[in-house]
Amino acid sequence: MEYDGRTVAITGASRGIGAATARRFAAAGAHVALCARDTEALASVADAIESEGGTATTVRADVRDEFDVERFVEVAAREGGGIDVVLAGAGVYHGSPGETALEAESYSAFDDHVRTNVRGVFTTIGEALPHLNEGARVLVPSGSIAREAKAGLGSYAVSKAGAEAVARQFAAEIDHPVGIVDPGQVSTDLTGGVGRDPEDAAEMVLWAAGLADEELNGEVLDLRTWKAATR
Image (cartoon, rainbow, N blue to C red; front, top):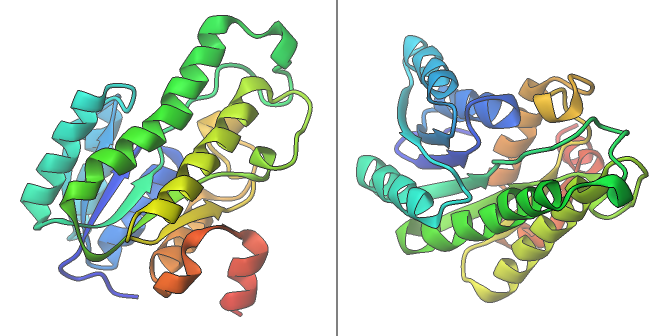
């Protein structure tokens, strides 16, 4: 699908799924607006996009700070003529995958998981709403741990369940379609480099962004759904 003339706003775009998705949307013709806390890594993603003929706007923003997010979406909308796709992709994981017992976690780790991974989704969608173009849609990355508890993932898993709940509630209340994208385990800093290539996940996000409105109703779009639809 081509995205010429459209603007895609991505949080957590400095690495992993966010960075890969930014490159993929730019290759499809979109203007991508990117934010993250790591300005150097963010600039590297933008440079790669522009070296391949794409266009990117970067803003240093922390999704834990609603004023940062407000500024980010305002810049994205101003540079791109409104926003057509939002990917609320920023996330943190304090601990080692499979070795983070909930009972042993600190309050600070629990609080930051919730503030970044849950409140950050709420803030991203809420601040973007006034800037969404007609036909715009919102995507929230997630994983099966949000729905199927697995030992060793602690409050990170709790936060992903919360992020999905935020997405579903917005889907029930706003006019724009909202989808939860579960690409399976992806090789990122959060997973310790274990999992599928982020480029594969980016293809799935691009597919989800092009679905008919009635298919983005707060439901989970998982790997099996994607493979069945794109065979």
